[in-house]
Image (cartoon, rainbow, N blue to C red; front, side, top):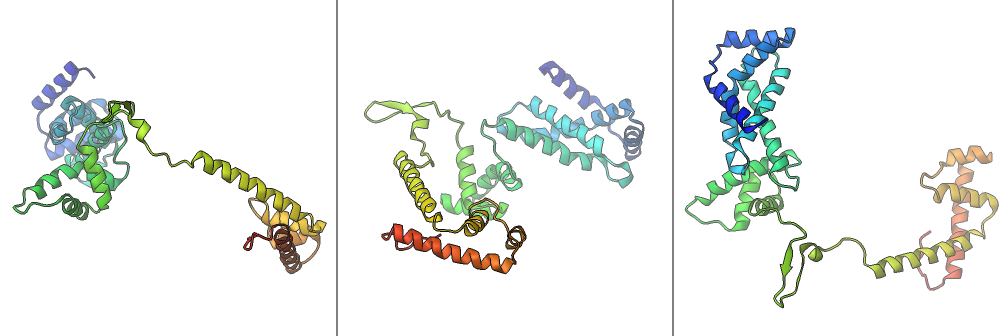
Length: 287
């Protein structure tokens, strides 16, 4: 929708007459049961003042009021599609929630390139943090940052760490990871160069691969001491992602599940002995 179209929509909304409860009900019924487009147009246009009023409350988030009104109009149409006249509730009461929700979702999608407010508690924190911070800061007794965050967390019902994180996000604009950072010695680097990676270090990866290969050789050698039936039971019970049950193995081998358990227990003891014999320095080796 162009700027001129948005302006015309606002002008038309301000000229639209107010509806009585009976007129509103008739229009809602015509739209819900007869899909009368003219009824929908009249119903939505008469409530555009409500959209403008709700959108005006969110002007401080740096987004165009025209865009907020447009998104609120989308919420208004969604409310009209879901409204049930038989419940005898005023349409404006029902529509207010959908209008506000549509505007808030738009703000969360466009306020920052980083998606925020993904949960209901984070969403409440995003839209109430500034108001609560200003209210608490107006107290005669100055509060420290930690005390301020604690009071806001208690008021909204979120973690204090979440308040501190959201406060930091709202305090400054988005910064590109490719933005240059200059050190005291005059050298520069990208911000992303200072990010700490959670991945293991190269020497840790190499050490882990060597240890895994060594354990694999030890185990392969130890398995040679088992009989064919013991090896089958150990492989299907211990060396597969979904270990077979004692009952299913008993049916395959033609023995009871208790006998399978006994053979498995004996096989594990043999494995442990073989591993300790091959690697006596491994005093505690769990098989």
